[in-house]
Every structure is written in C-alpha cells, then in structure tokens.
Length: 366
Image 1 (cartoon, helix red, strand yellow):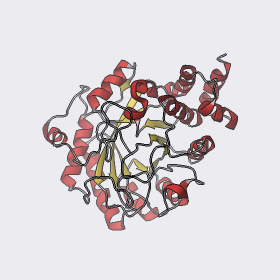
Image 2 (spheres, rainbow, N blue to C red):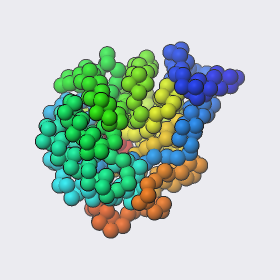
Image 3 (cartoon, rainbow, N blue to C red):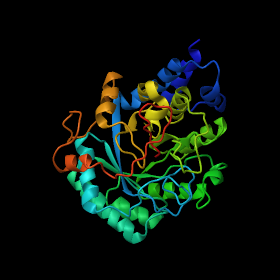
Image 4 (tube, rainbow, N blue to C red):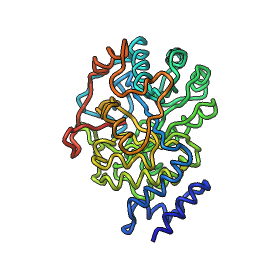
C-alpha cells in the first residue's frame, strides 16, 4: 500500500524527480493518502535541512505606483485595491526594519519594490543599503525589484546580495492571461542574469489562478531545470479590486499536495510556504513544515500574516525549530530598542485584511 510513497521518497533522496504520471497523481489522484505523501516529501526535506525552519521577513520598501499590470497584485496599475501608495522609504527606516528582522530571528531579510525594474542609479542606491545591512547583521539579504539586466545584477552582486527574487508565477502558456506588460521570457532572463552575476535565484509560483495540473508540474520542472535554490510557493489571496481572484481550488489538502510535489521535484531546494499559509491551510498549517523548510512571518506586502510569536509557537509545537541567526536571542516576541519602536509603529500602515474563510480574515499576497 505504501510502496509508491517509498519509491517517491527514495527517488528524491537520489535527486530524481517524479515521473509526469507520478506528479499528476500527487496533485489529483483520488487514492492519494495525504499523510504518507507528506512523509515521502519529509524524507528529502529532513535529509537536506533537518528539522530547521528558516524564517523570512519582508519589508515593502515601495508600495503601489507600479506600471505593470500583473492581475494578481494589489500594487499593479490595474488593481483597485485600497492600499496606500508611497515611493521608496527612507534608508533609516529600511535599516531599522532590517534590525527588527534580525532581532526577531529571521534567516533572511527581503526588500521588495513595486516597479518594472530599477535604473542603474537605483541599483547602486539599493546596493548601498545591501552593504549596510550585511555589515550590521548576520542575516542574508534578498531583493525583489522587478526586471534586471546583467549590469544591474553585477552592481548588486558586488554589494553582497545573497538572493534575487523573481517568481515565474505560472506556466509560460498561461502567463499572458495574468500580465501583458512583460513576458514569461523576461522573467527567465532576469533569473539568469542574477545567476550569471553569482546571485542566488529565488523564484516560485502562485497557485489558485485557474492553472491546470500540467501547468503546476511544468513550473515545478522549470524551476528544477533552472536549478533555483529557493522556491516560494504562494497560494493566491482574493484581494478585492484585483483583476485575478482565486479559482476556488485552494483547499488545505490541495495546498499540501502542491508543496509536496515541489519538494519531490526539487528535493534539495529551500521550499518556502509563502502567500496564503494562514488563510488557506488554516488548522492544517503545521503540516506545511513537512515538505517546506522556510516561511514568512508577520507583515507581507499588502496583507497581514501571523506574527513571529504565533508562528514560532506553531513551529515548536510541530516538532521543528527556528534556524535563527547569531543576533537572535532565541526568545519569542517583539524585538527591543530601535527595532521595537519601528515594529510597534506598525511598519507600512497599508495592510489589507481579505476574507478567505478564516476567522481572523488574515492573508498575504506575495
């Protein structure tokens, strides 16, 4: 009965991806038993990462004002979502949030700007901030700033940027249905520019936009072919005012199947449960840690997630442990000093709370 799950686990340990038939079965097979599937995914997760959980903190350093028309995003030019728009934050605030992230136990600090892509001057400004964060805190730094070319990537690589986030989001065939202002190939080109410069790529997908089983499998395999070491798996949040809303497929079980597939196709990658963890997984949230080894906490982009105290409690209760960083005290709760003041001010102040069948109504849209 459990032979098929064992074969999946053994293949992942050997670095072999599931066949197309097995991948489709993982996502839609009626005879799939969820717990044995999660255990099969966990075998590879534990082999590469043990029971450690990497925590990531986002800072939305520029909000709205985006010329792109990505239909899933509340910051796009087409969205009518009620968010507060602002240009790039002051450097002091960006660095204060980096301090808060380090003191809260983050493994990585992720700065995000809503834009098509930075100019060379903006890349140099961001590089200066990256240097300061790296000098002050023993955490990795990630940027998500739209489309980049080789020159931009070189500037950021020389500053010590660890990761560049640029999600594939969906299949190449479907991409034109969610965005018309840039192409799927533009996203591939940005990822490969980062890789040529020596920056680690962070790229994943958004599930729940009407994609087929084959399309989810295609994206998982494309990320494997690109050798992406960090894969955020997002489950679409239906934010009022966005052109693209959830297709209704996002049950807790479906989300966990997708995470399991991503781990089995990319056994040594950092698989992150990103948007929709709280809202779509609900009471089954702790099970996400069996295929995934990282997650976001607290604020996201334009929506709110569980704070670090609740998230760390979930991690501990599920039998896992926060990886942390050398500046983290190992204690749950709010940071101290200037970082605490920044966190208590509420960060960005444009947080939305979409309803997604969850009492708290909290979600995320990264």
